[in-house]
Length: 487
Ligand SMILES: [Zn+2]
Image 1 (cartoon, rainbow, N blue to C red):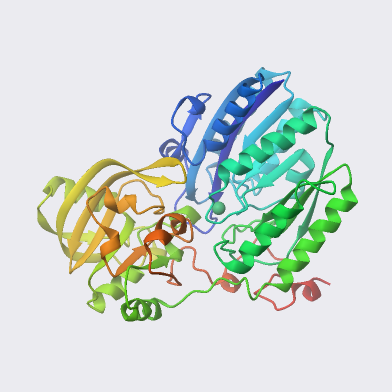
Image 2 (cartoon, helix red, strand yellow):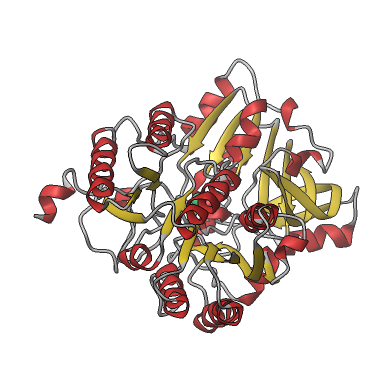
């Protein structure tokens, strides 16, 4: 068989002040057909899986574009169209193909496009025709749309948040698409909306049980795959919101019945599955009172992975105002402050303005008398099995706390973002991470406790208050019963 593989994606926060242009794709990962000949990143990992699976079975792989951007605002129209057309041009040139496998995010929006994945899949379908299998792997924070469902043969989302199962789902998708291309199955997809906008952390027991139940349904009774698309709350597009998607073998009614059953279960369990967050001061109080550290505080509202700037100072300001010490915090995206530190050099003490630079959601800049402890160019951090660049990283100490500043905007995934600079985060009382949930896999093993903080910021977790303009349908928790409101 001839198998075409590619990747195009980002998670678009339509409220973010940061535009997404070509430079963000270049910085995060932009490869023109050779991504699998380079080390795997979070975004290219599925392509590595597909190539090795295909080649092990003697199939021919044709690799196209692999482009991913760190989440921010809408992608610039010309940039999206150029990337899309490069991917589709390579697909056209690769014909005839038996299978098309595309790694996407699922919540990508560009200027003039609310549903980039639907647009991409619809055009890919027009190129290959109705008989070719098209499979899409998606982040679970996706806006599943009717256009996507109609255009693809199989869509399959991650099941875990933190996303520790990117490779496992890539293996699943390969198998599902191979079986369909070889005529052993005839996938049909059904999708049901949940009318909910929230976050579901799969480290939370009620959701972990739901994930296990989804997995238990797969591979028997004619059910091929089950996905729970959590949705991405900060994308103001018509299709935002949680949805269940089921792939069945030839039986659309069976797929729809299971999707409806699982959507109803999520609705029933909405309160037990609701993510808990604390105010900044309540979280700091609880961390100080804890018998031992480190207590990890997640500043969920300033997660670059959700399109936030990662330079917000709301938590830092309270730590300084309360004179709390024995704290390490990162990553602060502040190329200007990093430049100051590079000029002054390791060991220097200087006046340094940190954070608060990107807009109102970043808070006020904080002025510190800081000592530059260590500078590491081309610093990396681990996520799953992949290594991801964080740019130049600088460890500074000021007012009894340690901060890490960096030049490539990204959330923090792993303690090695601190340890490679010489900081031992296991020895402090409080670790403040700018991340919503991906930090959990790396930090939970060293944490005495994990607390989620609801600070102001670009992706503040007050789901009822998100100022949607394009999305107008009723949803929980903004209304108690969106089903009745929709009638
Ligand atoms: Zn995600």
